[in-house]
Length: 85
Length: 372
Image 1 (cartoon, one colour):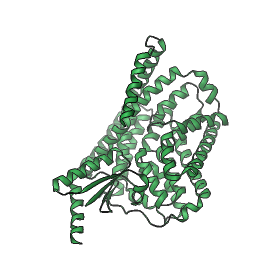
Image 2 (cartoon, chains in turn red, purple):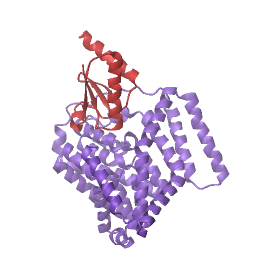
Image 3 (cartoon, helix red, strand yellow):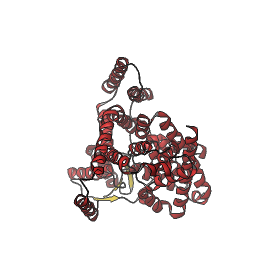
Image 4 (spheres, chains in turn purple, blue):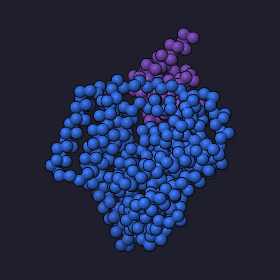
């Protein structure tokens, strides 16, 4: 799984990155977490409000910092989707 | 901060402490003036204006349905709708520059195009709710309202200029839209949210107006109780927590810089010679408005710090026209933001954008100065 955290480097984006890593750890899932800070690159995902979360090139969240539990939920959905495919 | 930047800051502080003429009277007077202004703000503006303003901004962050607004900035929206929406939505969508630039890039690259994007970019920082409320509290409501109206009008004109000059850009733009909204809407009626918002605004206004003290206290307490009632009875715990955390995040982000800005503003009043200000920007002429406009373009003001600084420049004799001009360019343009714009839009677009803003702001100040 490749996870991208989109955001120009403000507090919220850093919090999202930290919580994502926390959620992955709690779920015992291996994933590649990247931080995307380039605005042009962020815009190419069609995201407007940062921070945004992209799992395997699919935007799953934008415009706020979800809780760790919510992140686990999002990760689980994506895991199931890719597992079924 | 990069390591070498940290080193430079520390080295600078060392040199300052080493060579500073501590015994010169001007040093002590200016430090005293900085502290005095901090006390003035702490006693007169922090509790009655800033704290309510932060709560109001927190309310907007949690309860206003932003996806509906953002959809109106998409590529399919008619221009007649996109421009006004872009020019006023800064007030609810953005509080600091780290939310403005991604939104701007998105609107520019995939949304309504360069015109509305530019309109948003200009008004976003200029009309955020805390800035307008503090301007009104410190400098008077005629100033706050003029600042708001001038920013909205200028943003639309600048947007139209950009859209006309770069009309080719928008043709290749319309390919794909935005990712759809992914956050859940809050389960309350618009009526509840509107009254929640209005009550907080009422508290702030009540603090500001002059009336009989007992009646004032009673009204404020009533409004506070009504806000509390909505929080306890209507809203769910998770949304209340979110409201608190948004308000707190904003406070953390803004207040430390504001205190530094107030202190600096107090010092400015002592160390900048009065006749320099009166000569450069004392009269409401085209030249003095352009000076103010250029100064605001290059200077970086952290959110809200423009208020104490302009307050003190006015105490030194800056005219009302140039002051409004400085409000207009001060927040929306700065050297750091110009570098980011260069990267996103390219040199030609950025150049014309800055030129339009500098000229339009100067004229807005000129008109305001002549009217007041």
